[in-house]
Length: 512
Image (tube, rainbow, N blue to C red):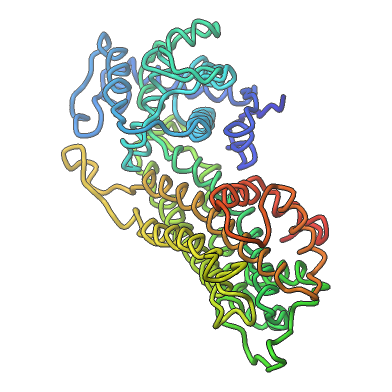
């Protein structure tokens, strides 16, 4: 099994995906263990002094003015975890929780949190045992980090609360730890706070969304190219020299992908009744500009994610010179903004795909295709309601594009009077990515049917590869009306599992 080694300098997006989705094992480097021990020595020294230090010998948030005596500090750390594990609503997905736990471990291993090495090792052991804390949908304001979600994870570390075992069954966390031979942790000064105070949930969801969107943007280039073929559009607008004079990187990549898919097509450039078409509609002609802008938004989001992956997010932090200082690095604004930016780009990509689908179904704009791509229009409704479903998804995506990060609601007796709402931005982006997949699947379904109805014209070799693969996947072609939901579900799985991209790339090679 693949192993990810966690050091002091952060982890990569590939590491997060390997642990969250691939079940990779986690190990601590010797450097990390040494850094943990050194930082803990500083915290222990401060804990022994009479002067109050936030997070070490005081209460938390608006209660930070109370000095906590030695005999109550273990109880203080237990209490912060128990009281902050206040999430409600449905369970969060397993991959999100594993990313959350792994990223908190990443910060712990930085040597800036003051957590003991044995606590970090127990976090790794829980991940490696396939034990996943039950984390709920609601409870994070994205400041101070993802408090409630991380608290539910810390609760499992203490052997309390509920968790999902490797068999998928939810049981008491203490029982699962015992069966795995893992001793619950007795938290000491600062450790409870250090386990809760980070942007790990929103960052994990950002990294997974970027991985999914990388595949979906390439898939959208493919379906846009197929729609262009089905509409007998021109590929001249994809010429590299046209995109070189507006040098947005994503736009150039998207145009290159479409051109690669269309190479060798006999459908492009034909016009109904030989009447020249001066220009295709915006949804066809401007596909690279819209998809390209989304790609460039993704590039910015990756930069933010890489910076956050290299960060040690905690409050207070242990500095190399021995100081323990309060700070505001837990605020989720940098991550929250790009999560919202991506939701806007996703909504627009879905919107332009839906417009191409509608054009394929409209006999007045499809350049010779039958109404709704029906077999016997009037008797058959064809793909009329498939487009309704796609339109409903797009409408929902527009609502999901409303930024969460533009909101703030004060908490903790006005101590935490401005929050990022980054967790909420991440949760709605996950839904948006899911729905974008469905929107692309509907365009694929319509475009492939439209191409097959263009009898006597040969599609591009890459298109042929997609047609063959999608039909083998159980997505049926033209014909009389039938129960459409299974076809749409098969198309969705074809896109979601990366089979659309793989089919095209058998001809084009790796797309950008």
